Length: 253
Ligand SMILES: *[C@@H]1O[C@H](CO)[C@@H](O)[C@H](O)[C@H]1NC(C)=O
Ligand SMILES: *[C@@H]1O[C@H](CO)[C@@H](O)[C@H](O)[C@H]1NC(C)=O
Ligand SMILES: *[C@@H]1O[C@H](CO)[C@@H](O)[C@H](O)[C@H]1NC(C)=O
Image (cartoon, rainbow, N blue to C red; front, side, top):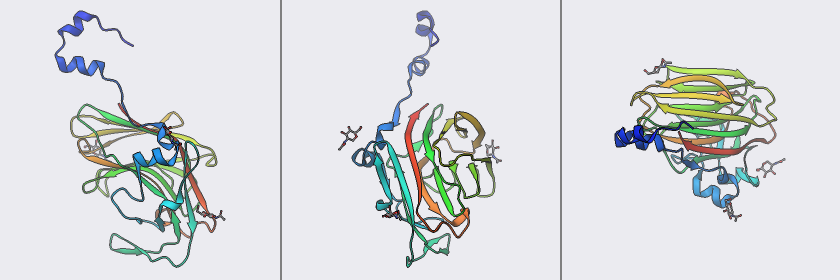
């Protein structure tokens, strides 16, 4: 820690002195995955905007979200038949799975001069037809959207930041050892009171740096879901697929 001589501190305007002494605060602690009762203090089941389907072939429910051992959240996608289709963007999507999605109860708004760190350790599949993700999306309108990690059934992990539906920054990285847990961390930070810088890390190594246009001051939902088919191809697996998360934490910068 840098030691600031008292005389210097005393001469700073009050706001600077406050900034110097500010410490990161924890918004979602790693203990949130210790058991179902603490988990439900921080998260809701299904999509946080309401609804049990989105842009792929899974219908979400609470029964496919589980804390089997303390500290590890597991979402399971189970093949099913006879489900009514989903409707998304005016199109019907066949539902071939029941699966799990969870959303943080709180919203995250990058303040001018501040930001957040979202981190966790993930065991995700890259099998065709499986589409696990850890992402932030706009509470009001769209974009903003930051895909802090998504796996679209291609053997890769993708990191995306959207300015519009057609103007986006993306990075696809080969994803080795999907059976193992990999650390993902995403730092989002105000640049100029309007735009937000996004840094994506995997296993401690910086993968990409993007800038989201006009993201500062706009609230985000945090979503963890095991979507199926859709952008990850079809048909998906004929047996259960799991997606597990541990050491999940959200702090301010
Ligand atoms: C759940 O975990 C929290 C946080 O670790 C702990 O305080 C609480 O006692 C646990 N509750 C149960 C029912 O195990
Ligand atoms: C998105 O907008 C930001 C802010 O204007 C800009 O820095 C960034 O390059 C844009 N991204 C793309 C893909 O054009
Ligand atoms: C598939 O997952 C569901 C939901 O967790 C579970 O009830 C079912 O027993 C699983 N099937 C197999 C074959 O493991």
